[in-house]
Image (cartoon, rainbow over all chains, first blue to last red; front, side):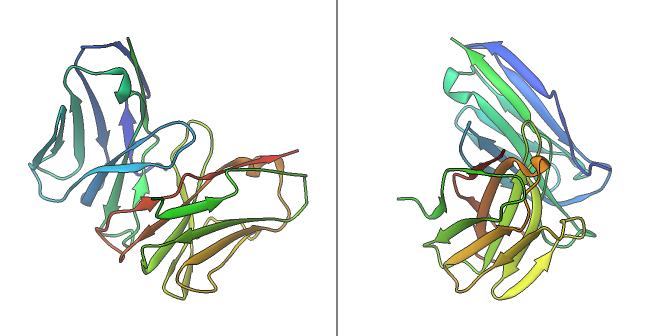
Length: 112
Length: 113
């Protein structure tokens, strides 16, 4: 049973378009992180969210944490080819120790 | 400068031939993790060390072992690699457990022939 689900699994868009990817679970997150992974590299942390309803912005990226702390979204405005990569959410759960569990990821391709 | 270093970047081994992957860190972090990531899948935690305390995930096969001789180094030993063990192996560190940021190395891509 997968604790985290991400959608869509794959996304291919043109440069300049906006997009949103989602991460959700049937369990309440104690905290949630978003990572971006480029081919042949390890994931790099983008943001950590802890408080329900929290919104964080990182340049063209906007992260939202659901009020119930069971879901999160990542919105990218005016996507660029440099945004191409695998976007992973990782959640920690109250009843699952303190280690982060990763979702399967959304593979984003931004075409010039 | 790289803070979590994994060697080698690419490793080829033969079916059943033991292989060791290495990870070193310059962050002086307490926790070191090993993740397995197969193509188009999520990184899966194999085990982690909190200082010298070893914590194995329940579904990690016995074929996988780990050693942490000191704070800076951690090794992943695969005693008898099978074809299904071909994957990217990621080492990560964190200052402490819980809501801490994970710092990942670049990974070792393991091929099993």
